[in-house]
Length: 522
Image (tube, rainbow, N blue to C red; front, side, top):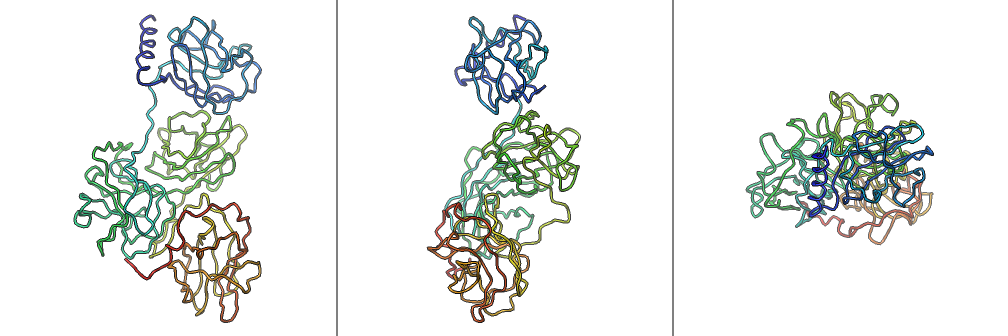
């Protein structure tokens, strides 16, 4: 026992030179949602990070024990404000607890929340019983620079064969833009290899708007064998944006070797608690959630997998967070995390992922996995992709003539995204217009199409996703409706009345003049 106490004390003292706190373990959730990570800040102070306790008992206290379990006799300690009353409610809070005078952490083997009346532990941790859990992460290789065609984003290495482009933008106005890896930044054309896009094709790249994109390089190749990444036009030897990799890269190791291409499963649909993020299948055992948000204000929110299509209902499979902790989730603010499935299970066994409260059977947010029948089509040139997580849905086209249809979203105050747009193109003068009233009548604001052209009538569209930008000096909040309109005969082919308030739209960070097509195509 003396040897154990000495080693713990030595560990705490040894870390102080480099790290203000030493990880002691994670609280096991036994009752009342108790959870949190426990650290030794110094010999006399415990730091509990993301502490959760529902407070639904009048007899919960912090205690220390000299044994590996919380058994009498116990040492009761005050809470973070020095009170020795029963604990209140805690929702993902970071707190510091001072030990009783004359005591050190090395005097004890465990800590927890304990009910004195019922002699029951609500949650506990045995110090250093388990090693600190491995938290998988990505490595940033840099941000895209030297850009044209509005290329931007940050490049991450997930493992030696997998890249993440985070917040990727590209206007799609090139007949031969492609993703490439290169060996020499001064000779990209002569030393580059094309990478398939996220759909597994080497087609010319389409429009991307604030997208998180995962790319898989060819079998037998490694990212560390290359010196950089670029969006490149091989036909005209033009660099649209690149990043030179750091000279010394430590590429993370993947969970296992896999020939499977990562798949975008969809965005998390927020029902409550500010849930959001983009969900990817890395392999049959691993999920990546980029930009994950959750307010942590529930004592029972957990990651669960559901086996029922289109609904989150029990029985569900609880899975751990990025630390493998199955207790209540802490607060997340735009985090990128890897979540692993339980042993013996595969993503193919499930239909969706949810942040779920089992206590009240509430789905805080979810994504239902695409089926084999939902495979994406091959994208033609100028098909657009956009992250709709922060977009405002304005409504769907009311079809009046020429098969006009589609869903209309506002990406910001000067940008529209039309999802699944259709129009038969048989009118010589059909154009996009904005109206300041709910009646589609003059005066109207004529908009350019996705190519930046407004002189000619619209061509045929069949279930196409497109981005439309407003004219310079205009903003969506000045208008009430969008229509496909024929000025020659004053005919409304189809329109959408903006059903939501536009006053809160984010301001565009891009110069709208720069999107006008100048006729130059690379």
